[in-house]
Amino acid sequence: MRIQPSTGAVIAVLALATACTSPPTQPPDTRPLGDVTATPRECDLISANAIKLATGFKDYTAVGTKMDKGRFASCSVAEDLTPEGKLGLVIEIFDPSPHDAEDLENTKLSTQGNDLPAEVGPGFAAWRRNAEDQSIAFVYGWTPDYKRLLTINIYSGAPGRDSLSDATEFFRQLKPVLLDKPK
Image (cartoon, rainbow, N blue to C red; front, side, top):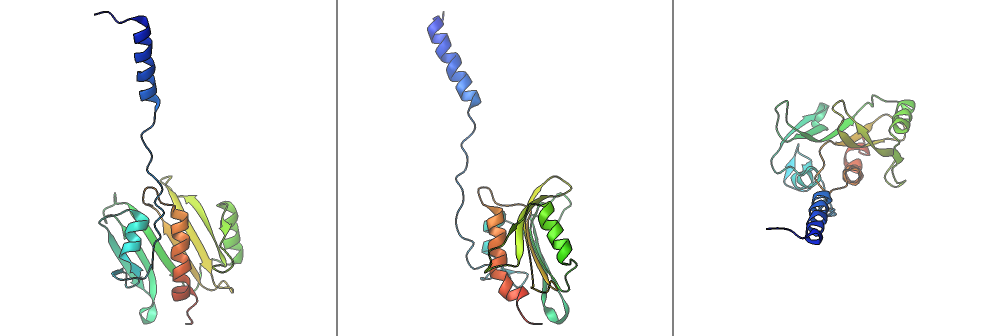
């Protein structure tokens, strides 16, 4: 069977077009996180539903730590606890903060961070890379006297989600509970 030159050209163009097209992209997932302290909870504070939505993990392990008097200190969420397991979300409160105003400003500048909205801040949101060259969305927010610091880090964001917006929303809702609370 012989292919006509014009038919061969059409086949070649179709083959090239098929090879050059990228797979369909996933539409953005714009569902709100909802109440990030709703039940069921992990680490006695963080909504399991918000964790699943922000990280995309169906199954995960959450490990929490507490400060003196049983106060929340941290919540780390990983797909699994093996060395190869993916870390998804880390929320930490530092009291006292390990960083002064200059440290925080330098971190903001080096990561090209953006100030949080006035009603949420003081603090900033930014992207950084870890030693494995993984992009991490993070928010640092502190008390006006810089004595206490709340950090939200999303290491493995769910496909199609805006991890920086999710980190900011976690911060917005957790700030009154963790950062603004009197000692």
